[in-house]
Image 1 (cartoon, protein in one colour):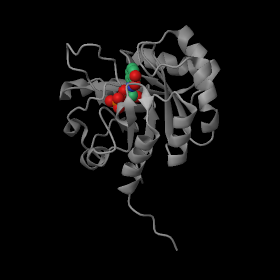
Image 2: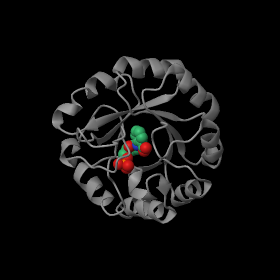
Image 3: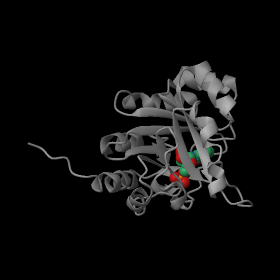
Image 4: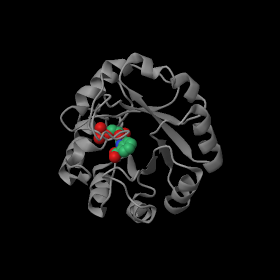
Length: 222
Ligand SMILES: O=C(O)c1ccccc1N[C@@H]1O[C@H](COP(=O)(O)O)[C@@H](O)[C@H]1O
């Protein structure tokens, strides 16, 4: 089965269309004011309109309050809430119960020990996303979306008990190698399909999805 693709941090109708037309499986909208990809809930709802029924809509949040989550849920009606902060298993469970929406927990990975909390989350989340942990002292680092890769061997053949995605520093040139090395069932990209921070490039989005699909085994037709 070909790997699923999520394009994250979309903020224009043109790039949403490019992602959908190229076959993206999930579109991500970032709700984190410090990010160059941050969008207001109303703007995200308008952008997501063409995606309904074609791709899953993901709302990326970072340690969001209940009030902020309620506003996102009411305004955007996402299929998945991506938790990209320091949310605990209990907080993930509470968000899932409160909203009734599938939860994807981002785990930031720098070394093998960073995977230790995975079993504690598994019963409370619907999906994992493994992203690079920014090195301490990296000026201006975001909780994610830094275009940094981690050592993919740390998640090679991983079975976290839930579906999972690989992210962190992926781009059209390295995604096939990342998939080959890790066996990840899904990939997520943000910086790697941008011409500048927060500026998605339709050509790079198409190239990324082509790079993933190209390596998928051909389906025989009668
Ligand atoms: O993209 C952002 O601005 C962002 C902000 C805060 C938390 C996570 C964010 N993005 C997520 O980070 C990873 C990796 O991104 P990149 O491809 O290395 O730029 C990805 O999961 C985004 O969803």
